[in-house]
Image 1 (cartoon, helix red, strand yellow):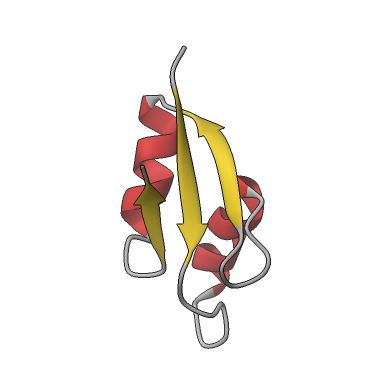
Image 2: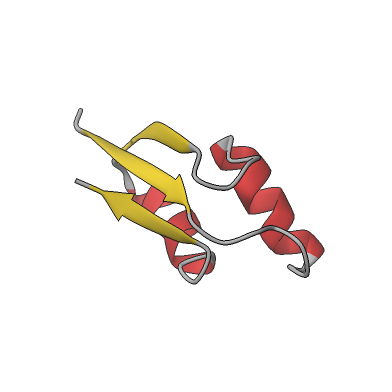
Length: 58
């Protein structure tokens, strides 16, 4: 299965509790942190729900 790298580019401060839970589930705690995740529908949905906070790194 392929993998994608996700980077937290904006601060978690001021986000909703639901968005914080999504970031916790992805393992993103600090700004500029990069995590490698499996590329599947669940991960893509999490990225879509916090798309204004993260970016997919090539």
